[in-house]
Amino acid sequence: MLTEIQIEDVGTYRPLNMWQLERVMRIRGPNRHLAILAVGLGMSLKQFKKLPLDKQDEVQRAYSRLVATVNMP
Image (cartoon, rainbow, N blue to C red):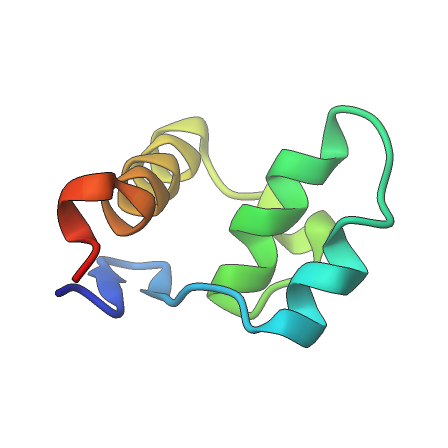
């Protein structure tokens, strides 16, 4: 089971804990999904939005791999 994924030149993406998830779920609009990706990297939303689009896509793919049903025990 995967618990974290290293992304080159960005950092390590880890799943959110319950406290982080609760905070992110208070965000409304299209920024909610971006906030999930940003917090998983330990970044603020502003920092995440400054990443190049290819790195943002790479983080999205890492997130998808971590939450995939195949990855569940």
